[in-house]
Length: 321
Image 1 (cartoon, rainbow, N blue to C red):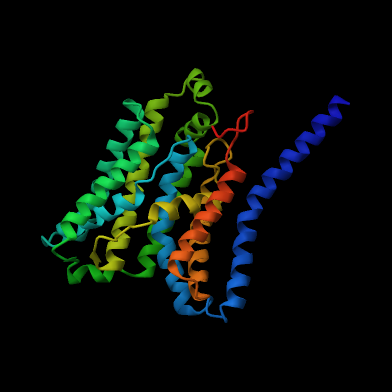
Image 2: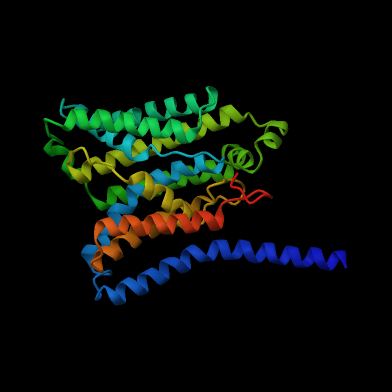
């Protein structure tokens, strides 16, 4: 009888794992069918597909780094503010006439500085990651609003040539491959997932919890810097609204990709890629159908709430951990 129960439990776990892997892809297929039919065939036009890819690239690159933070149970709401700040810094640097490599590096360093601060305050000073990242988001927004209040900053002409799909896809693939190897094939990813599963057990097993969490923030900061460079070249300028709402897109992308925000062993890198495409497809499809932008924000929030409720790990009392 015990063997039968164990067999059934094993079968249920296997079915749930398969369902977790398949559902995100089924969601994409369903959205494509619905938006293509009710959007009068506008979804799969060449121009709209290019638009979806352009938007997906920088959201996906941020999500690749974010997955390291969320896999250990972390929470970060600073992505929109930090990417806006990084775009501002890279444009200021670009206008000094330096080579594009220096501009690219400045974008990464600008984002990395904030994520180092985020990590130090969260990991070593033990302030809630939610509170820390929220404060950083507001600080970045304050700097951006002050800088752009009376002056418009635009990129020099030579940077417009870097707004091309080939370069973006190369960066997307390159960042994905590096992050995939680090997350799925090295101790960095395994340690972060172990912390997400049980931080006490991970520490007892020899995992340096603080060091591992800091590495996660560093990787996330680098990916945000890369995404900021892509966004800068695409937008051509920076304003007070640059990056606004991207933190919600990143979180929604992870959840739509089947990534549990409670972290743990179920977190997979491919989920960040699938989820990023899904969230952009969702927003783009709703726009094609004529849904108001403000309503879309509400729909995205509702989808996120439902999916978090269904995927977040609960304790025995039914309270979110």
